[in-house]
Length: 123
Image 1 (cartoon, helix red, strand yellow):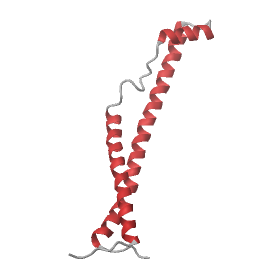
Image 2 (cartoon, helix red, strand yellow):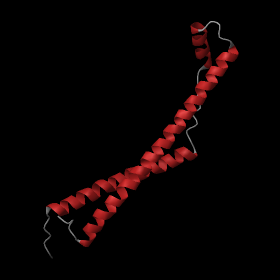
Image 3 (tube, rainbow, N blue to C red):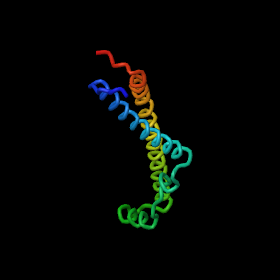
């Protein structure tokens, strides 16, 4: 049985491999969740659920001359704005997850291959 001696470079290789592997795992899980969220979004988010009775009474107090039609129009605009904001957030989370995977994968592969070959990083 050969005795293995650890040096700073081996410790570095394993630590970087471990850290980038964790980044890959987290990024992959988030990426899968992001794909699901893009394909099948949460029906309770981004749909603009409002309690129209409360909103109507608030609007009537602030703007006593506001008609029902104007209120409905404003409520519809708010719903559309909220849906656009949720759509933007879903796409942004997906891209962030994809970036995490794309950036960490080459680092992981490089360092893991160095470990497998037993080759140190050039000084």
